[in-house]
Length: 81
Image (cartoon, rainbow, N blue to C red; front, side, top):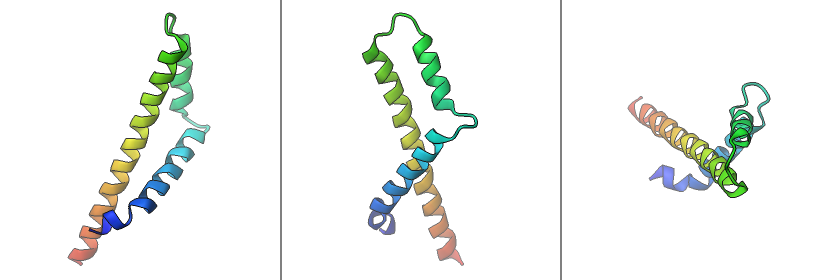
């Protein structure tokens, strides 16, 4: 399938999008989350890192899923025309 052939390109583009979102100054939820995590008493540094990693992984997976869905829909529309 076409998407399998495009996997390296999709992964690179998703990584670029993820980086762009994390660097965004306006409405930066990542920084807000880090501030909240750092404000929680009783968490050790390993737990803080784990929470941060879970957030980053979730964002990455959501971007990749959305990107692939958009490509599939675009291909379906193109084929239907």
